[in-house]
Length: 69
Image (cartoon, rainbow, N blue to C red; front, side, top):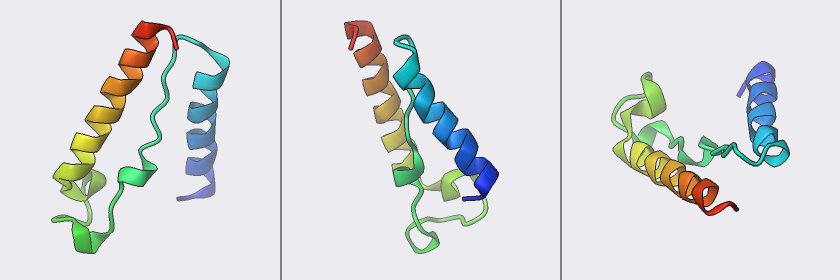
């Protein structure tokens, strides 16, 4: 990750700490290596598991917001 990308990532993650109506999902853990993915140059290397995990994390984040956590 580039330095500028890290700054953006950190700001996005901090936004959910400062504002109770925002859920920030860290998707870096869902970015798998080329040897575990079908395409090395496309969004999340076209890894279906990445997209499923991101969707699940976003859904869980929305549930937390709806529950007021």
